[in-house]
Amino acid sequence: MNVLVIGNGGREHAIAWKIKQSPLLSTLFCLPGNAGTDSIAINVPSIITSDSQAIIKFIQEEKIELVIIGPEQPLADGLADILISNNIKVFGPTAAAAKIESSKGFSKTFMKTSGIPTSDFEIFSEIDQALKFINNNSEHINEYVIKADGLAAGKGVILPNSYNEAVAALNKIMNDKVFGDSGNNVIIEKRITGKEVSAHAFSDGNHVIPMPFVCDHKPVFDGNKGPNTGGMGCYSPPQWLSEELQEIINEEISTKTIKALSTIDIDYAGVLYPGLMINDDSMNVLEYNCRFGDPETQILLSKLNSDLLEICVAAAEKKLHNLSIQWDQRPTVGVILASGGYPGKYETGQEITGLADVDADINIFFAGVKRENDKLLTAGGRVMAVVGSGNTLHEAREKTYKNVSKIKFDNMHYRTDIGLI
Ligand code: GLY
View (cartoon, rainbow, N blue to C red):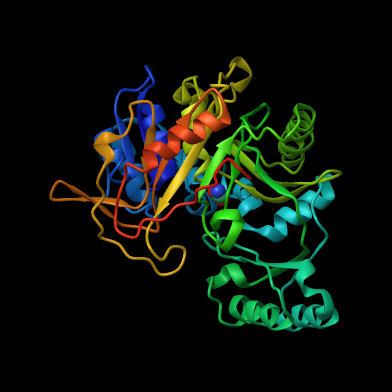
């Protein structure tokens, strides 16, 4: 079977790496792909992911039988819908289903009407009304979160610590339109604290198969300090999350979400990834994602013992009920190596060395890396993920960080506490 993976991040490198191991695979293509996928697949940098007609032509020419869509933007733009209407098998939800990520207003309203636990919220389409809300709550503004309704590359969630910060956030989103039409509406919701966990599940619209839980570390510095990033590293499983709570989340959040979507005629095939906040006495969905997390995927697919291609085909064909999916039960730790300055303005073009010395049982997944004259250079904020497993979380950390220390580029930075908090 010929397979096309859409995307160019660390997540897509991990997807391509795992698909490559399938005995069902003939030829693997990545569009556009990156410097990691170029050694395991045929990269297609000449077509942009928004050009659905060129993608369909390419799929027909190369006799591609399955397309796996990695990032949220092409899903929100309806790439899956266009491919499905051209009788092409797709792993990834339609635009209507992807709305659970592409419109926070939709997802919060859906959760409220479906009995999925989430914090209280209000949706505003006029800045004057949003400002009025901020004025009325100015004394305790740090109890709220302001979110742009649409996709904002992970930058649309603001936690104001003062009245002025809240006003600035609203102006930035609704007046200056820094996120374009994604800022036509804002959601102001109650802030909740606790421990965050990523709950991924495969879905074919009828049947839901949960994946292991993963903890992502979004703030850039140790101790969860500093500005948020796309994710600086993950570990799995979170030992602090009881089996009982894991089962409740799988039933009361993931399975319930897919069932509730089907009652409003939304057939959800692909990965459902609710981000949750857990407290001693409560759990709440912070947001839904309509795809694999990044860097959660690099950790999850390192743990997957089953055939990812078989799973993706089964999800696209509504046959997930036939599968039993096996996972490496050992703890896994993944650390992101980032460019100097990230998540602010960062430098690129630094030579990366040391990869040849990395141990054979460590996985390296490239994100912001490019090849130039046989050298590997940094080309993005998050450069790569280093992923290792061990018999204990301590051992997984030791192995992963031992290998992190072998890799070098100027001004490289990473968190040293992945798996500790
Ligand atoms: N790790 C966060 C995300 O993928 O959205």
